[in-house]
Image 1 (cartoon, helix red, strand yellow):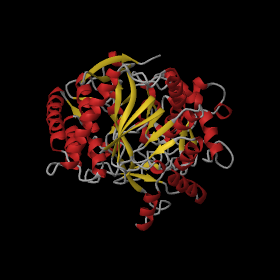
Image 2 (cartoon, rainbow, N blue to C red):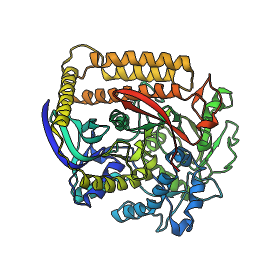
Image 3 (cartoon, helix red, strand yellow):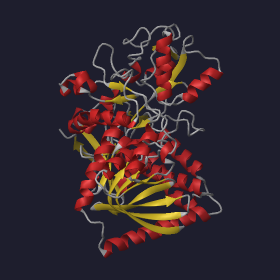
Image 4 (cartoon, rainbow, N blue to C red):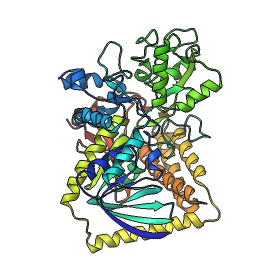
Length: 554
C-alpha cells in the first residue's frame, strides 16, 4: 500500500451522529477537522436509517426541577443503562439536551409534532414522559450538510483501526484507505472516537446472516479496542443486555410499537398496559428483557405485539414513527405477506446478546488517555447521547488541541514509524496470502467461543477454558487470515479488533465473582452488594489486560 501522512487539529473517527456533531462544533472554533469514516458518511452509523425518540429534558414542558426528571429517568431502561456513568455525566447530558434539540430543529430535522414538543414511548403510563417524539429519517443527511458547510473535511472509505501514541498521549491514528490503496498516518492534536456500538461479537439472531442486527453490520467496537490498546479504561465489558422486536426481523424500534404484548390467549403479559396506546407502548419489554424466553421455555408462548384496535389516525401515527425509526423494509415485508397491523397481532421475541461495554469517560468526554475523547454508543447510549456528547467532545477536543502542539520528539516519532512498518507488513501478508481463512471463518469462531463459554450462564471453569481457546484462535488469526480484496481487508481489521474485545470479556468475566442482572455465574449465583456503585474496568498495560474495580463518580 502507498503511505501518506495527513495532519489536522482534530480527528473525528467515525462519521455517525457523534462524529458529525463533534466536527460541526470543532469547526465553529476555526480549527482543522477531519472526519474519517470507513463507510459512506451519509449512510453510516446507527442513526443512518433514522430515529423517532430523543431523550431530553425541556424545562417549559417538564418544569424547572431537573432533579425530579432525572429521578424518573433512572427507573426507565435508559436510566438503568446509564446509571454506571455517574450523576455528573447524566446531568450534563440532560442539561444540554434541549440545546441540541433546538439546534437540530433549526437545521431542518423536525423535532416537533404539529408545532409542539410531543413526548411518547419509553415511559411508564401516568408518569413523567422522558422521550421527545421526532422525525429523524433525514438526520444523517442534515448533519452531513452542516458539517460540510462548516468546512469539515470528510474522508469516506477510510477505516481507522489503530491509535498512535500511547498512555501518555494519543497523537494520531493509522487508517486504511480502500479507495486508493493507501496506508494513512493521521497526525492530530486531539482525537475523538465515535465508532458506534459492538456487533458481531456474539452470534446474532440468525448467525448465518450476520447483517440481521439492530445496529449496522460494520459497527464492530473498533473504538473500544483502539482505546484499550492506547491505555484508556473500558468498563463493564463482560455485561450484556437484550433487545426485543419482531421475531426473526432484528431491527430497532422497541419503544416505537404502540401495542400490548399478549400471550396466545390474548392476555397481557405485563401489568402496565391493557389496550394499545400510542403514547406509551408496552414497557414490560424494557422492564423484563427475559420475559419472552421464559414464556417460550415454559410453554406459555409465543408472545405477540397486538396493535389491533388503534384508530386510523393512531395507526397512521404508528406507521410514520416506524418509518422514522428505519423500519421501512419491515413494513414493506408485512405488506407483501398480507399482514395488517390493524387486524393482526405479530409475534415478538428477544434478540441477541447486546454488548454493554463502553469507554470510560467523564462529563467533558475525556478518556483516561490525554488527547483522546469519545462520544456516542462507545461511551453513552442512544441518539440523544451521541448528539449531546458529540457536540461537547468537539468543544473540549478543540480546547485540548489549542494547548498541545502536534510536533513529536524524535524518539516518539521513531516508535510510531516502527509501528507503521509492522502494520504495513501485516496488511501486505493479509492481501498476498494465497491460502488461509477468510474473515467469516474467524468471526464465526469468535462468536461461538463467546456463546459457548461466556454466554448466559458461565463459571470459572467455562471462562478459563474459553479464554484459553480464544487465545489459541487469536494466535492463528494473523498467521492464516487472508483478504482477497479491499472490502475483505476492512472485515479482517474489524475481526482483529473483535478478538481483542473478546479476550477482554473473558478477563473481566473471570474477575466479576457474582451474578448481576443478565450476567449469571453458576459458581457465584448471588449479587455481591460490595460491588454496588462500582464499575469493573479493564485496560492494557504493556500489551496485557489488567482489571480493577472503581467507584462510580458522585
